[in-house]
Image 1 (cartoon, rainbow, N blue to C red):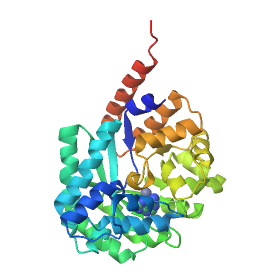
Image 2: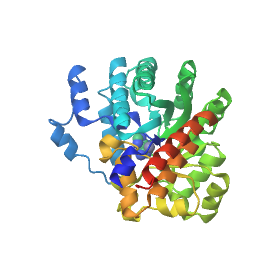
Image 3: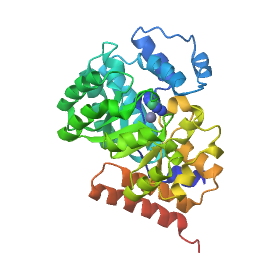
Image 4: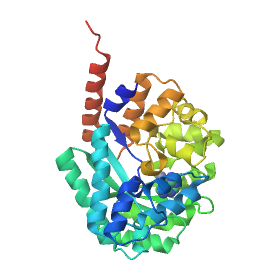
Length: 339
Ligand code: ADE
Ligand code: ZN
């Protein structure tokens, strides 16, 4: 199974670029930019990666992201992730960034966006990995800040394909961002939102009804509401599920208790993703493997999960078909009888 997953052409739809900041790069950038970290060594930083909930993780994640100061820093971060994609046979990725972390620390929106976009373009031409960029609003900040951020994104409309919503979920319901999402949709952005990670199933309804999202990020709490599950199945609204993240942040106690396979069997369009792999101890292949092993999935089921991600992506129908052909070709070789 490990070899099968490793070579399988895959699409990633839920990945925070700031969450790919490996401790080694964090220390290198801190030195390059004269930023003082609260940890004296890579080992002591890694030892702190034990989280009892989402907020405990976010506190470290926001602190770590402060080493990113220049256009080249954002380029290096993004390009390192794309090189990892190449190793993992990720053929297309739709990545999040959190501009407000950086602008509130005095780094301009243009510095952040231009470094990321330059790396995504190079990733496409040098590594053959296609991508889309999704700008997230921090939901613990006021909606007016999100509106300011959206205005800055308009200059990058050719590269930023969608807006999203992340950070502390509880107490920050989707309805708080109804106006900025309407503005984003009217400007032509696609929309996604984190909902039902730690927050209740009602927040998933809120993301669907108030924000009119195209996809739900996480969404695992939907099982608390059978009507919601039926709706997700009927409308085929994709969920970008992050299994190892959910275990690290104690949404589930153990991978064997995760509900992704239950949702899959009920017909929800679930996809597998890595969220913040530098913090959660696993990139995309590790997430696929953890689920496949915990639930004894067949190779066909694993391939269907990869196909779900192609289907749920924001690629054009033509590009989806090309990726589906790539997947079919891989499966042909894998399942060809040996004579
Ligand atoms: N920002 C980065 N990772 C996140 C997650 N898992 N949930 C909410 N906000 C995030
Ligand atoms: Zn996330």
